[in-house]
Image (tube, rainbow, N blue to C red; front, side, top):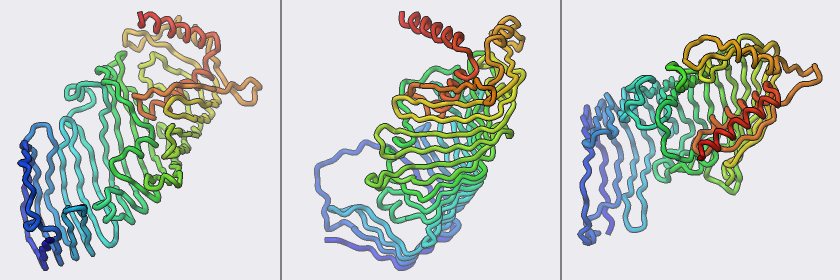
Length: 443
């Protein structure tokens, strides 16, 4: 016997909802519910909740909580089927609009998520969030007090995040995110990593293809558009107390082929992006990965325009004890083919008049005169295509499974630049020294 509850009209003005999450042990007494008392279907012709407020508490310390200062919900033609027998939960509606203002979610121990406005409209099939911000309760120098291991502290602010052509039925009933376009506009991201903290237990970090395949829901987007994104990465090591940083500004990107619904179609995600590094050199970036390739293979092609060598000083910030005092890069071409085991690629870097200063290890900015002189005698001070001895920076790197893809790509850049700048004799000496250290560490 199936019972249906029909509600023709419900209007609530100024509701205040307070939800409390508790955790109790539930014991199954083995009894079967009487199907005659079940409600299987709920029908609502019209629903209106106006100028409400929402507070969600969690009685366990250190668990998420949330508040919404004001919300309005209006819907018509609601049809809800509750789980019964072989029928799953489903919800459908003819039209709906949702407005939430000033929502704050606490994400202990470090973060708070703020959303100034959330708007949902159907049958327009749109979802829009404005003023989205992830803030940290502790600063870069102090966040290690709240966590046990080395990890990234990430904060961001985004002017708007929107979806058009959103399939609400698939999202609610099939756990599937399907939309024509996702657009993220006006975003600033700050990433801090304190490498003086303890190493975390080993955990594999998935490459993009595997990450998409392992999502708890399916996803299919015709396009993902990112506008005016600025990213600053900061890293601190044991040498100095300051963070070294690298910044990418005005990133604009478009991605296609983000779909995990149809493996038989062998979708390939293709992302093209432009940006500027340190607000100086233009960057063009091209990334491809076959989503259902079990090796998680991906390829990268990038081009960096002219820039002075000194911009890398802000990136290292004495962490590597190496500073460039002169030199100009005419351009860098970078290619990488990689998978979950390892990768290979090439750096073609044209530069001239390179000079290097080696700092002392005591954390001061004093120059180690002897080492600086020696290195400047050994390095290749220029690499010009028309000179006839242009050197390609070919490299092979292993995949470090506990590191993110950004580390993977950066190690390729680093190894390719070393291959270009350093003479073979110095690279052989470095390799021998590393082997000795590894053997000693093993003992």
